[in-house]
Length: 373
Ligand code: NAD
Image (cartoon, rainbow, N blue to C red; front, side, top):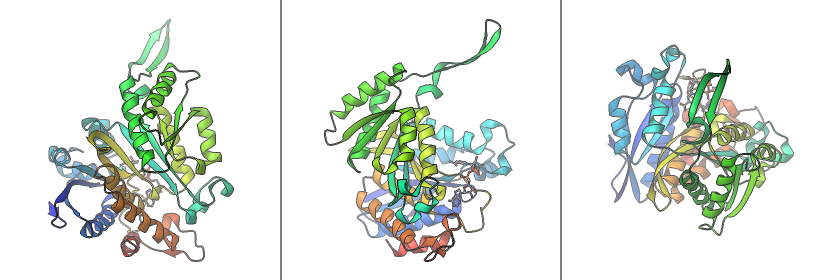
């Protein structure tokens, strides 16, 4: 364990870099956090542990007990990414993603998934949608319920009825589950553009009716936030046509899974996108959470020093914001990444050979961010 400096507030962070590009991008994220904490009235301590394939190679399990214990003792988890061809033929429960990520989510009751879909003004050409729709960039936060709904409801299974196979999945949401995720989304909206679009299918699903009614009740606690509702099919279209009009988008598990991937695609560059999975509330709108890039371990470019560290660095900013309430420090990091991009620094995934673009590797991009903090 290492301490970055002495100060009254110390945040303990479990650092699980994982596999592939994980360790490369994590080093840059830690350098950035070290610099920001050195200039702030808080300090951080890191407890670095093995996870995923890296843990399998040493301990034969993807989530060793000491890694889980370090996460339990921490104030937040900073996660890299796990997986790769080397471990793909293992039994499902031993595979890095299934054997490490899912148990971590379950163990810590991480019920809220936050995925910002950010398209910087200088990177709009990377977006596959019409330039007129994304000109000037956009910043949409997708808040997805992660532990309920169709993915977990029972009964569930495939059985024989009237001589043929029938598949059954059940969508179940309790009012308290809906209210809990709605509070996360409204709190996030309060710290951003104060606009919330809640997604449902209230014209067809009973779940949608309870969802909409509950979100409207929770909205009374946040009178400053402008609330709108959209049916999910319409939302899928509107997000492509006018992403700039959205601020926070709230959806249940299945709808959020699909819409957050759609929004990641519209943003154009996977290596830029961070995510947070939040669990128990700590009060004051803060949560225990696990913070990680939206992308995977990118085995195709691992070890070459060319991965884009932005998503991992921006995961640190999300951790500062949602687990520690250090909004000024989070703003500083987000601003520095944006400045580095605006000034033309590009890792290979976002380099297009345009004038004013400088192609750099992982560490040089980290340097560019550090210099702009
Ligand atoms: P991936 O996200 O790892 O890669 C998809 C493409 O995006 C690749 O071409 C990759 O080079 C590129 N890419 C991703 N992140 C990048 C970055 N930071 N900089 C530059 N380019 C980047 O998805 P995949 O190829 O489907 O999966 C690879 C492995 O990652 C698999 O083993 C998969 O199971 C695992 N995975 C892990 C997580 C996780 O740990 N949360 C998530 C998704 C996939």
